[in-house]
Length: 240
Image (cartoon, rainbow, N blue to C red; front, side, top):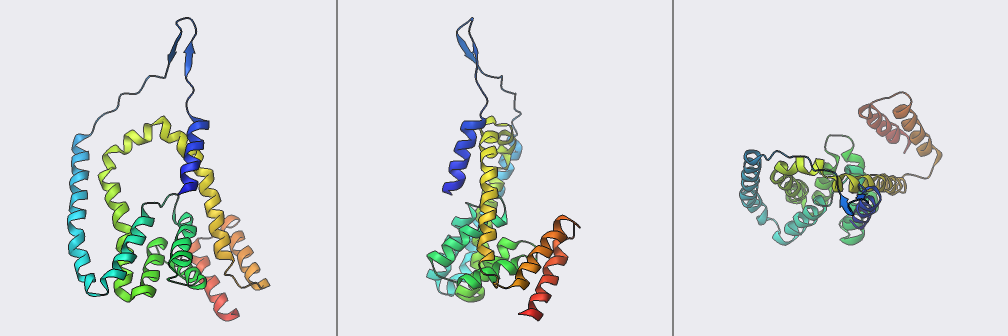
């Protein structure tokens, strides 16, 4: 979170629109703002949908309370907090999740965490799958459900409620400048995720060969990842 906020502040300061000064009049003039169309109807609909989400949460969570409520609530709140900090995609999420569930709570080992990340790449929604795997390790099926709800519901509710403000945010010069600073920070966080996963790879030449072959297949031959992952898994099964 600190990296994202710092990068956004640097981007806003560095890429913000300059203020033109009129020397003759001694006044500073900014670029005229575009007229924005208000979409009250869409905003009202989005807010209503968000309230339905919130109203339905107790009904979904009540059945889970029969399975160790304290640990399930902790799993739900932990992943809910992480979901609101997710910025830049699933790979940026890996270092944050590792710091909290491995180093912080100790719910899974480093190897189990990397296995969860690898399992998530096999099917759509890698973040949801990884969260469900960790929740399963902590509190069984109920923990998997709690982790999945935690990683999905808060960000979904925020997205639905704020849908009406999307056009305004997209046209904001401040937001555009901040995002230009955040993008390189996201690249660095993805690189950190690569290092995190690489540490768990077996330190043998076969792992290096598989890694290089996967990179060449993706960049040079444009092979879909859906084929690379099962082939690499099959090679790992026979080699290790």
